Length: 201
Image (cartoon, rainbow, N blue to C red; front, side):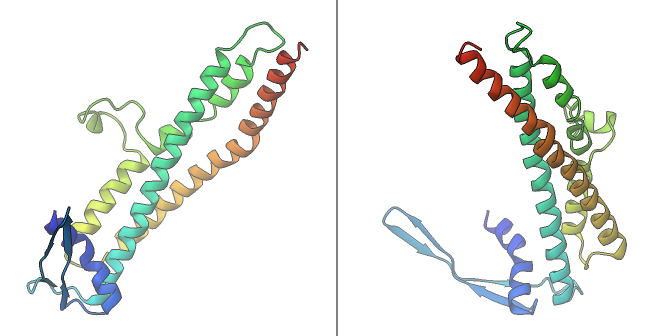
């Protein structure tokens, strides 16, 4: 765990200190009443030629890619919660007056953005090879490529990252428009019919 933390925090130290040469730290671990402190130094691998600016660029790009992946995961969770609600509405009373099946199915048909963000058919690791890569897969590949590099991100890596993150924002924007228009309208319709049914209308 300590090794992992050192690796992840090294770019942070570089960004804050403006140097990749050395950083001393003395983290404290508490277990009940027992406290342990161990001092260590984080230093740049002397075999690497990456500069402090290179570390900063690597850190910033990784931060942006990770944030974009987080937005993908958050949006997919929202879409799946929405689908659950839509299925519940579609399975409601079929008495004609309060039936929302058609409206719910119409909105559900427009949530295809989920299949652009992630592979909705993936059931095992082998499906990665069977199905086309989605935006989440590409982001994970970019994060791995950039983090493992011993140099600052290349122009190609930065350009591809910017393109993929822009695609993510565009797809999420489409869902946000759906949520604020047709989903909101369906919610108002469902609420109105619930009130009407409760009042005997």
